[in-house]
Length: 200
Ligand SMILES: C[S@@+](CC[C@H](N)C(=O)[O-])C[C@H]1O[C@@H](n2cnc3c(N)ncnc32)[C@H](O)[C@@H]1O
Image 1 (cartoon, rainbow, N blue to C red):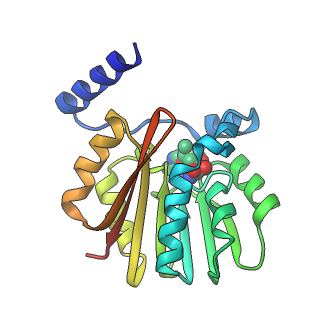
Image 2 (tube, rainbow, N blue to C red):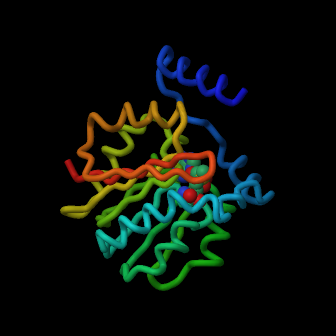
């Protein structure tokens, strides 16, 4: 049944174009409050997180922006690294409150912000979208906006579970970006692809 639904989604995205998965901030807040995303903390959800951790360990960024950081599951892993500053932004107040209480410190900050509205003069060595890009409208334009926030020689890292919607996202973003490296990890029944993009 799930395979048939996936096929229907793939056909729909091909015929009608890409649509993000729309979830309101209030719904995100409720879902975080009710623990609906707690499964992301389990061992079988590690694939994307460890891929990004590996890339960040290799790139050794001083400053990191995590767009759509949720409750800070990536921040928890990145704490192993010697970065100077980490900023996680997310549209959910609930998620940001949880991340700040558990993980906020001198070098790790969290802020409520819509990724489309977020502006800063700061430039980041790495900007990550971990399982968040397919909730956002016009992903190619959004990544162009965030490319402009990269420090010289900085990198964008995007990680998404593999399905019809995220394949539609890659089709929109990849022609505008230079892929430096990509890895696909298989864990349980799911596949996660993580790509590192060079500045244009
Ligand atoms: C599937 S969760 C992933 C969270 C986190 N990256 C992780 O891996 O645990 C998607 C996140 O994107 C956030 N999000 C969705 N739309 C957003 C927007 N317009 N601006 C900022 N964050 C957004 C949601 O609040 C949610 O926390």
